[in-house]
Length: 155
Image (cartoon, rainbow, N blue to C red; front, top):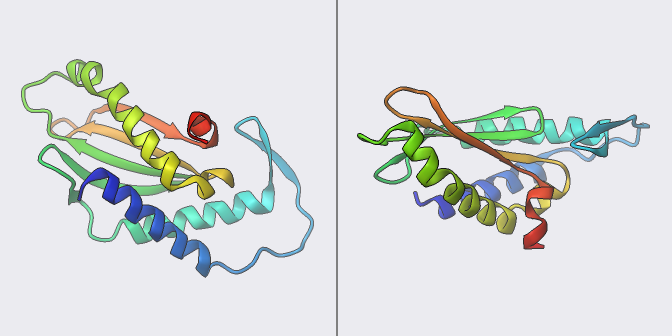
């Protein structure tokens, strides 16, 4: 599945999970500071539940080949962050060469797609994280997190 198609699939899947959650209760909440902003504890709890359900749903059928070089290995919840882990078949290239040649390009392209397709999730404090590892060694090549602040230039 092409990365942009997968991002759209993930956004639609997250939307269906969100719509199945019960409405938030009207109990008082206690604010917490998250990423420099105030976030009600109840909203954080609800977002964590959304992320857990999304991770469980989106993980079905993984690992999944994305293209000739990339396999989506896992999707897991880390609080209010949905973490996608991709394995890159880098062939004879060194990890440093992959970082130098691909990290900024991947960050820019993935961020643009996520910001356009997942705005409402980012707006409520859900973060999408992308981790890339070397398929042969399992070593992390790079990781980037996309949150509302990452998308300022797109809105």
